[in-house]
Length: 449
Image (cartoon, rainbow, N blue to C red; front, side, top):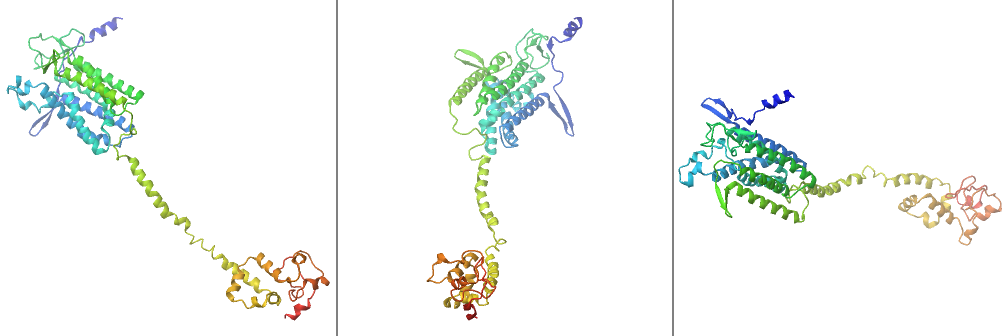
């Protein structure tokens, strides 16, 4: 227990004043001063870009587009933030009441501190819009992806106020009170050297870090789109900025509205909160007229795919002749040639006198072309034709016994079946007749030789 109390006693009762505010880089013509304030701003930008790039990639945005947008948004944001600070705290630059006694050379000296968040957001959004148009993506989609990253960047960048010993609050006796070097130009005149002040930079940093977690949780739960998450960012930040800004005692422009006189940043936070709330409600009431996509109309990758799909049928049409190329398969129509070769010998086989006997006088006078055509007729058709020519016109075809298979004795049946020269010589089957073979010698067959 005593060790715990001893450790607690070792904890400082206040936040010490920083003893380091930067370092120098020696150069041939002098030295380059690197301020801690600038390093904090740079670290905040890097962290914010990292978180934004992760969320942007999950939205299906083009790879590397976040950097294309950042190169426009960051310079515009820094310039806008500086301009807002200059005009919201003009005494150091233009003199009290703009009497011309200020130092205009201090305006570009951003390393001394002084960036107004609202100027950075407004002009940074203009730069982001330019980058989004060039990348073919929607500004609203990018702002939703960047909202938590903006809070993260502000949370880290606020520590630059600590190293510059600026923008602190009023006196306090709390154990986390901030010490300020009495020799600092920002130390309030007339106050004791051991006075502690509210560390408003720490309040805002912790507030912003909590806001990062809240925005991420809300976005995961409700998937806010079309700029609604950015509206939540604006409402959350301004809600904290109102009470934090009211605690600060540094010089600032005072504005009187509705009988209330307060700092300009307080009024700005109130109006931004009201505007963001109204925009959030209106965007929530509007129905989605287009699909949820990060791409601008006409810049979607799907159009490229559609063009490819329309081009694919042409490629298929040009490729269709490949399977239809029957050049190597053309032997199929050439098959009848082989059939003719095999059929011609069959037709030429019975030149023993039977074919001339079975063919009538007119058919015997047929041309060679007609013989070639007959050679292509199937064997069944040829068999039927020979059978028909072997039957007498006066005899009924129902009684033809040649249509039945099996041997027939060479008795009186041979005389009946014979119709004058249709039977072949002994042992030779009639052309075109299947399953039958003559056993006798018909007298007419010898007459045809």
